[in-house]
Length: 125
Ligand SMILES: Nc1ncnc2c1ncn2[C@@H]1O[C@H](COP(=O)(O)OP(=O)(O)OP(=O)(O)O)[C@@H](O)[C@H]1O
Image: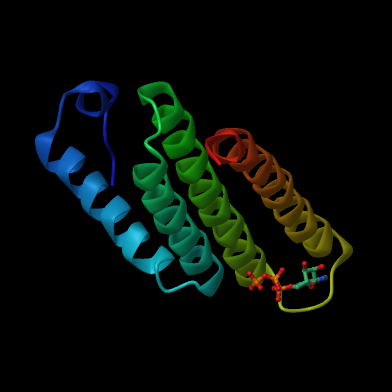
C-alpha cells in the first residue's frame, strides 16, 4: 500500500492505539515465556521486600528501573531467538552467535541486577 510522506507524519490516533494494542499483546506473549515469568516473579518478590524494608524514593527508582530493564532485555532476547528460529532451523554459526550474544547481554544485566539488589538491601539488615 502506497503512503506519501505527509500521511506518515500526520498524527494518527488509530495507528497509535494499534501500536499500544500490539505492545500489550507483546506483554501477554512475554508472560507465556518461562524465563520471563521467572524474572517477573523475582521482580514481584524484590518489590515486596522493598515495601517491607521501607526503601527510599531514589532506591525505589533504582529498583524499578532495574526490574524493568531485566524483563525488557529478556523480552528482546526472546524476540531475537524467535527471529533466528524463523530464519533457520539448521545449525548455523551466525545463528549461534546471535543467540549467544543476546543471552550474554541478559546475563550481564542479571549479574548487575543482583549486585544492585545487594547494595540496596544488605544495609537494611
Ligand atoms: N540454528 C542454530 N544454529 C546454531 N546454534 C544454535 C541454533 N539454535 C540454537 N543454537 C544454540 O543452542 C542454544 C540454545 O538454543 P535455544 O533456541 O534452545 O535457546 P535457549 O538459549 O535455550 O533459550 P531459551 O531457554 O530461552 O529458549 C543457543 O544459545 C545456541 O548456542
